[in-house]
Length: 450
Image 1 (cartoon, rainbow, N blue to C red):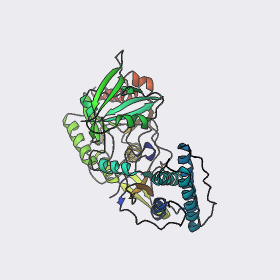
Image 2 (image 1 turned 90 degrees about the horizontal axis):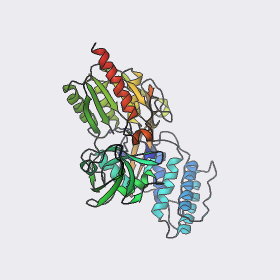
Image 3 (image 1 turned 180 degrees about the vertical axis):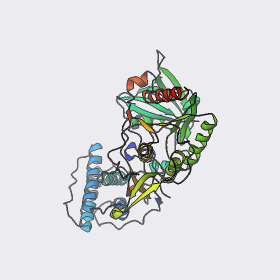
Image 4 (image 1 turned 45 degrees about the horizontal axis):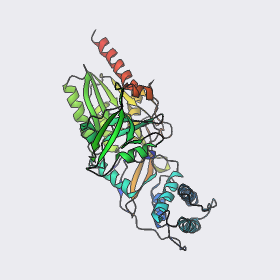
């Protein structure tokens, strides 16, 4: 089952991989006095077996040591974790790291568990690759990832997607069918407080963590809203949240269709084709496709969406395997949209992975114009490997490029028309990027009707 990974630095909010592999047998560890880093060595084995390029065990375990140092420092634990000399053979590097891990565990005492230290070390290992699709999920994050990919409730909360801008927190999207939608929360509402706790100075993870909670429990959001002189307090009962592929699909005004495609999970291509059918039945004449915040998804679902939008037999992306072997993927079906129907695509720094490949394919094949900001530059293919404790590794297994062979990893896709959504725009309730697309669509419709 093939797919693409999402942007791992977004706390694995949407994680899509090439395959899910069974847990690895636990690797043998070095003998040390104290807790042994069994899970760390298990992760090392997974990386060595699956990563697209040969790995240097000493370099990777140095990353693990850096992860330990960072975790100890964050916990206020004073301890020295040494490095592993470059060129050290793997057996010796494992022995040295085992001693470092035992020393770190002894210094941490009850401040940090061996599991916390192991997770910190594995994160350090994956960060050493500087690869957007190689990363780590805790057991809880992995369980959420599995649920979301199956189209099930992955977490409990109120059903909003947050957007941080200029140290402020806004509602970027209200998840259809969620508790927040039922209580009247709107896009672009600014979250001032959560249960009377100001969000000033917080991180997005801290704000999100306060909003989430046990099902059936209440949480009060104090919101700033354009057009209201005073903040609005709304109490919402938390519930299980199912995140759909498509947040909106509607004809926003005469002839202008709008689809907000949030992720590529199981059934996305089917849902996308159904949405196109509905809009075309409503006499859609132009399409605005919103991929902002879309973190990626399954490769086969991406293929289905591309087939719906692009003419048959066009190059849409390139797989680059070990040894430099390449394969160009082409569309292989009759598109649903008439080739004469204009398409505008909205992108931003949160558009990643599959969303970037779709944007690039539309741009390279001159099938659509991109409006917004440069995309994330996180485009590789990976496998998701379950570890023995329920955590998981995302491991890059092959590289990806556009249909013309242009690498996007670390680079991203530049829009044809740059439009930046500022905090001032949001507080005024104005979507400058969408507004640009709608203005161009109106101009086209006006000219074509003459």
